[in-house]
Image 1 (cartoon, helix red, strand yellow):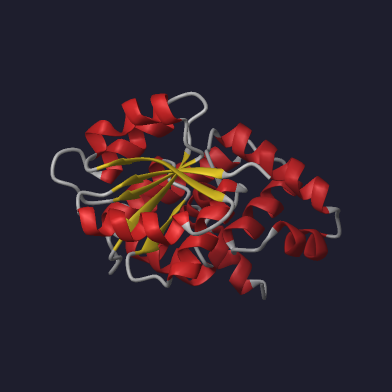
Image 2 (cartoon, rainbow, N blue to C red; image 1 turned 180 degrees about the vertical axis):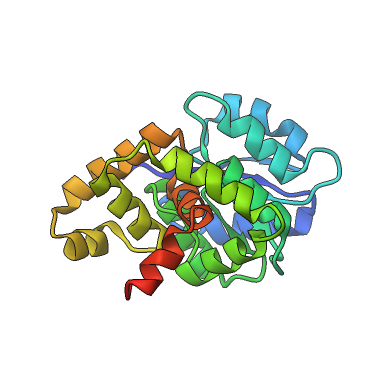
Length: 226
């Protein structure tokens, strides 16, 4: 089995040491580099070629949000997971829109952080439906109507089946759960998800969830009993 290559980015050396100790104990994870600021991330990514960047969202020079935007704009960019204290942090939401695969709380149990890294490396987001809803609820505000109109316009690029899959992704369902609910194979679900990402120019499932929420489709799904 090929080890998952991880780059750690945090301005606190004690946090980096703790993460390195925690993740380094897993047989399938390899720490390939560390940085104390987002300004160093791109150069380290070029040199170390990590699969996942585990990065603090708040750093003194270049923060995790800016570093995420820079990385996700590159070809063959690694997945990004942000470290945060949460508490409805608006920066987290902005980072997810920029293409981060999710986030973990700094006080998350070690086993869950290791699991989060494995999931992201496998292409799955690390946001539970509950946390996703908290983030998206926090995003609602004075610009909600404008976001809804724009989101609905973007979603017109999807056919009916792709739209159903997008809504199911927004509800936090796994590929297997979507397959069971929509009576299709897991392979077909994966194909639809890939098409949704391509048609909407999105990076990951979290961004699909945010877009379906902005469009009001999750509320409609709840009203229909889902």
